[in-house]
Length: 234
Image (cartoon, rainbow, N blue to C red; front, side, top):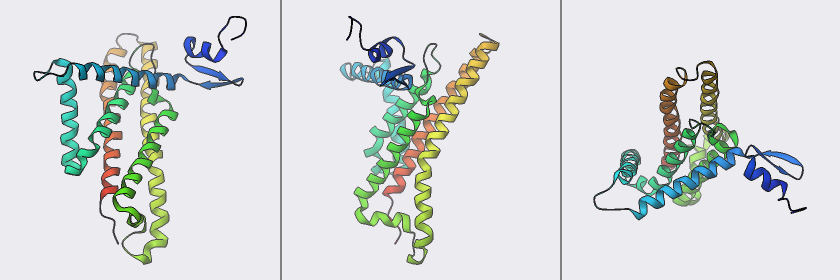
């Protein structure tokens, strides 16, 4: 602090969330801020629900129980009882992405998933996680997921499988980013052209679209984990 004024980074952080200045270079910050805002909000809501758990649930408890129960049934019907272990991760990821998507519909907010940095981070986490699950489950035999059923096919299958797995985070991140970013742009255009008549119908459409994008990310993550848990071919 110099001359009684806070550091420029602190001023940028608290009064201008679009970017922060670090070592004289402007770094985009708002997607990080809104991501953390979403996390803090979800933690507060979860804490409130946790403190008010009752045998006869209230409306908020009913709402989240319905979501978690639906996700649990879907995961277990797809992955079997093994999938129950991964319900907390998958449910948390779905709710987190859904809330970030919905933030773009709130005036004055931006959807963090409309920024490629956010979606790439989540997609890379998925890549590391499901491969770690496969390694823990199958140890060294996990390599057979990449080599195919025959040793003669290894020179062909190994590079193809490596490219296939590396393309998964690219697909996950670009799909989510592209759809959410596109919706944000369209919504701004509609708001400029027809502030009321244009935005009310489009809000309903985008609610469905943003929900579907969160579901697609959740579902593909579930399939990747399921694939890593399956017995490798020898």
